Image (tube, rainbow, N blue to C red; front, side):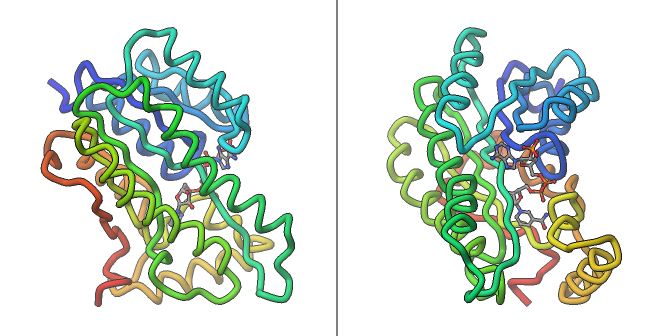
Length: 249
Ligand SMILES: NC(=O)c1ccc[n+]([C@@H]2O[C@H](COP(=O)([O-])OP(=O)(O)OC[C@H]3O[C@@H](n4cnc5c(N)ncnc54)[C@H](OP(=O)(O)O)[C@@H]3O)[C@@H](O)[C@H]2O)c1
């Protein structure tokens, strides 16, 4: 018996990193999981690594037509949705003088707009007791030089969590977010320009964590499972920091 037997989940940004680990964990606990991402080959590989409990739908969360197509596919399966992990996102370093309208628009359209319209379009499919989980970041309450646009998108996610929890509580739908610290994913390494710079970046980030290491995607997946399952049935509007203590001690 899995904790999520008979349930259906959507994980956006499931072609790598945190989303892929979460999709694997939810499927291992018995859920049928819809995975999305923009890269078809990576999506096919992710689905193949999970097997029968996975369905892949290529979709860019910043593209309204892609989102309509994604939810049409999920709707056709007639399963409804019990779990939505709106996780797709990313960012790039840019110091204040270097921020362009394009950088701002790309980051906000993916992280904020993508999360907003994923959740909005999921609403008609949500079953009673559904759990919505958003990916923020522990940067959402701290300043971060050269990362201000990304940090602002994650502060917006923190705010969405509270407002949507208030809006959906009467439907019995819970909304919570996870604030990861530095997690060893392609997205984190990709912030650096080359492998040497990436190694330095990861080393520096690990040194800033009280546990003195980076987190793994599987450690975030464990928190996704907790928020998706009945173990967190009395939680809504909350944010869980999974960051080796970085924002707490
Ligand atoms: N790693 C960390 O240290 C860390 C810390 C705090 C928060 N986070 C957050 O965690 C989430 C996952 O990041 P990660 O570290 O796992 O990075 P990752 O390995 O780069 O994964 C990002 C995922 O999002 C997808 N994605 C990006 N833009 C998308 C778009 N426009 N439409 C659809 N899918 C899109 C990517 O798929 P495709 O490339 O196939 O589109 C990929 O599956 C992000 O929201 C990130 O901000 C990460």
